[in-house]
Length: 147
Image (cartoon, rainbow, N blue to C red; front, side, top):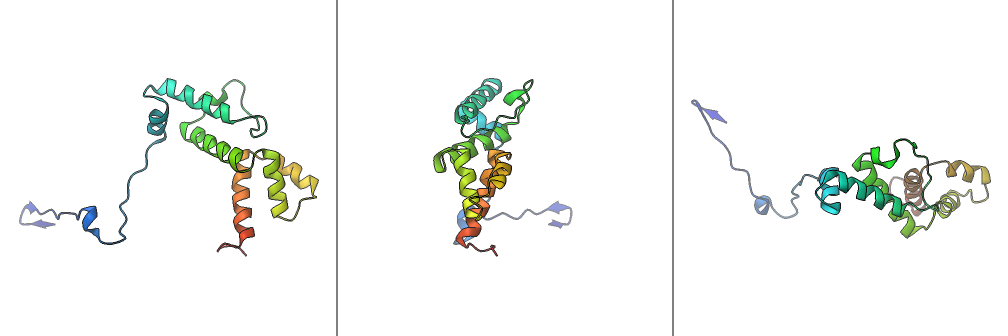
């Protein structure tokens, strides 16, 4: 507020004084800061370690290898690599393989015997399949927002 040439500043309440159930918004960390925390402070070495971690998680039964041979994973952004690592770990722990994931999606959609549909699903990336599985699973369980 401005009064007579001077600026009056209002004090913002501290998080403790916001009241019961009030939420304090905290900024999320940047992908680079997450990579530095997990793999070391040197950005180049940390990126190499992140790429190695993604390759370790990405086995033949989970990873659909469609990389550009010249660039590889080293030219993929940290955000995408972190997301890819998280999705591949989740799929390997919860489902086991891409084939099992495709079978579960087809079964949940009532198309377990449709080999053409399974073949088309097999062309999708693992993160896209995981998103589809979560969507189909939530629709099958009858959560709000399903028809």
